[in-house]
Amino acid sequence: MSWRLSPDLASRLLGGSVVAANDEFFAARDNLVTDAPPSFAAQTFGPKGQVYDGWETRRRREPGHDWAIVRLGAPGIVRGVVVDTAYFTGNFPPYAAVEGVAVDGYPSPAELSSAPWAPLVAKSPLAGDTRNEFDVTDPHRCTHVRLTIHPDGGVARLRVHGEVVPDPALLPAVFDLAAMEHGALVVGCSNMFYGPPHRLIAPGLARVMGEGWETARRRDDGNDWAVVKLAGPGVVRVAELDTSHFKGNAPGAASLRGADARSADLDDPAAWFDILPRTRLQPDTRHRFPIPSATPATHARLDIFPDGGMARLRLYGELTGEGRAALAARWQSTSRP
Ligand SMILES: NC(=O)NC(NC(N)=O)C(=O)[O-]
Image (tube, rainbow, N blue to C red):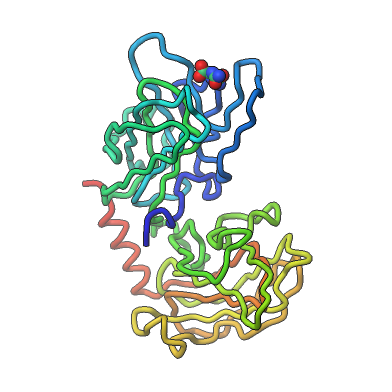
């Protein structure tokens, strides 16, 4: 799978935050991790100048560079970075570099400044008003990244795509096996006309309909679906199907099935067993269902009938012993020596 389809670990959707920057005279650093695409309205002048949806520093009058530090929403391995200079034309930085570091606990900006930063993207030329994409090959996990721009200017968004690597010490016995913040991933869906399916597994409650997964109206006899790769092999105990905010467009019913990719081919329909049989849903409701099946799954498939929107899917359960051991090994193997 291309890193472009993997979660943006820096995004506010996952809880990312721009914890420090040396300058943000023209436009606030916080905008770097806004989940929505950047926007622009010409001729909108505030007291400091033209208003930009991004991070923008003042013009340097002495040599140097500007920087911003992002705490990722979840620790993870970075596979690709987008330095998006959307709408910055006469004021984009000609060069940028990105570094990463994994720090335990909750470091202050001062502690981060002396952390052992490692290069993720070497100092590289940027184009203005462009999604500047960079592959990253460093295999170690990061908790923070630092964007450096040379010498100054504006960047609309910093996207840090990669794989979440959850800390096994922080996972209780029963947790949401389908949560993005625990390393789960939406690996396929039938339709995402109005909203991408990864929002189904984002942290917290959706605040509006636009924060959920929504398909187009179907005009055939089929139904829409999404498949989630779970945080690890586990047994689902309680499923939450949340149709919050979908009032005129909630699915009429849904079902959940599981499969174990370690022993079965996911393309084989016989691989899938019932977690929740087809069940009627109500609009704008957080439904919770106890799950009697004790069969471990690595993947879960949500079918909605026939189409519509879902705010969240939560699959609370336990990892198998093997699953927990695999997460511990991955945490170890992604540590920087
Ligand atoms: N017209 C501008 O965008 N000028 C300046 N930037 C802002 N935000 O006003 C600048 O010097 O980069």
